[in-house]
Length: 452
Image (tube, rainbow, N blue to C red; front, top):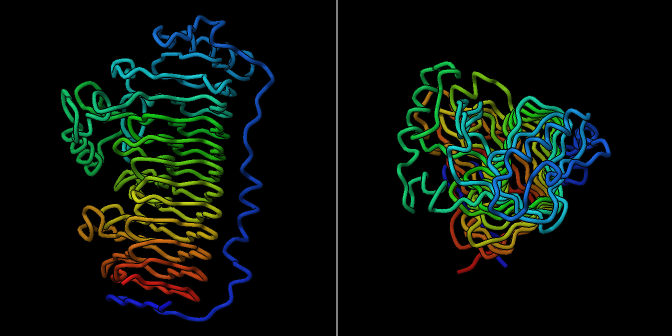
């Protein structure tokens, strides 16, 4: 066994320390007291009673909408999707409604016809507010909303429909490239949101689930497959619980769960096997993130399993509104396609303060690049007027069986990366030198084993 130390344009040192108290975690019980899943009246509204037919062919959009309206008018309850395959367009929830997939073979299969997702609704596309195709499951400005149960939400996205819009493969009438550039431009020009109109011919993909500006959100138990883009996207929400969700979706930008500008969020006991970050915490992009000015605060991630993905937990890159108080514990991560366990990413266009990020008791089998990645040279890098800050990033009791390197940390002189500490951890099968640029990083009481 050999101790290994690489030092590249940074301070990286080993020091003895006692970490029995772990004071950073004292705030967690108080946060958990505020995160209370909504409870719904004991009334069921079966979608088949409103005309839905579970043959996988009949469009059940109107029947599901009638059931949701009836449930809301009655003061709330569960809108029940029984066993069967129910084809639908976008579904919009109302106050006090739990969309409940009652059986393991309850399937909501979402149409891939883009016209069904118009008229456009207020949303964010990659952190920028605009009007665009409705997310597949959507609600805005509601209280006490949920999707729960044993069944599956299937977005049916593949390279012949939604995913082709990314422009990577598959036949497509067009790609998102031109519209994406226009959205960036009008964001930088601070064009009013009401004038940011996208839809037919723009090819900006919708999220799968987006609960926006909601209070008291629950997403529990369901399976999610074949998403057009981001899969679970709580946006500007307070009191969010994501529990026991099984996500397997490997398309482009298929982040598993993206809490954006949210407060008091619990993500627990979930399985993530994704085409992008398993969990990515966000707070808006560039001018829009600063204009809205709502950070992501008080997020607890625990007892989750992360497989494929860019990162087990990411902060950014759309993080212009900042982020603080993230607690990740008791998770398992492993895949030859998982880039890293913890990833912070921003640049001098996006900026943001990323602070008080804590991870402990995480078991990592295999990652593709590094255990900790901080990338402030992402995309535009140092070209901008809003250099980002990362401070007080603490990892502890991280057990890693195989990693090319421990650290891949890239700052630049105008940015600030300080107080990055890894305590009492073990890293094995290391093959490459760490990369640490313009950052203050300390490894304390860690064991590192190299492979020649």
